[in-house]
Length: 335
Image (cartoon, rainbow, N blue to C red; front, side):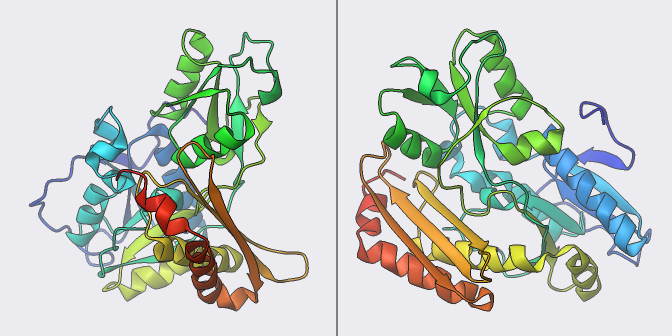
């Protein structure tokens, strides 16, 4: 697939705060309008979800690109209040019926900002690879982090990665880097700034980018590798349709991770990591960590429960982390 080209059934819209509500699904053209950010990765993800809906339900699906303040802003996301800057316009488009469903990377859904009560994540698509991968310039002889020279410059947008890299290689310089995947790779390969960058393996896989890199032994972000499909609660037919995409094990893991995140009440600058998975014995495990910005201090918790007790597990792990001092670590970091 040519990810730089426009796909059939796509259009772009700029959502106004006073936008006229569109016709509801089934009452107008008979198809679904699926909203997403306009980045190449978001469009690829949305087109994948749209294809699955067409396949499972034999319903027309139109992918609608929505410009968000987070995509327009070139500076630090904290200046816009964090990752919620990727969602506000899309939420508004859903609430005003300009779109019928929306696709989000779950790791970009804030844990400290309540979701609109009128909306519901009707499906969590089967989880992709959760690993973080370190990449090096194509012209570089360096193939792994151990080969980076002291003081080498590494780029990433995630405070969680920065903290964990600080624990592994405190001699490295880690600086903020954001932008779409291709622009980050372009800056890396130019060889003028970064000696390495860290990206999510899932983003490379979804874009079809084959590139050698080192998978890092660090704890993923809460919700990593998961696409969440958002709907209006008032549209039960659409909710039922979207639930065809829902993956049971992914939902069980998400329940544990997101409950833990809500319990910690971190903000966009909080280095919080959390990963749940179904173990071979059938138990649901949840590992959570909270760090200082440089990773020099941290608290850790890991517990197990039956898969249908994800929320209880998340509540326990967040409480355990708080008992071990997570609140102090979080509150020390400026919002």
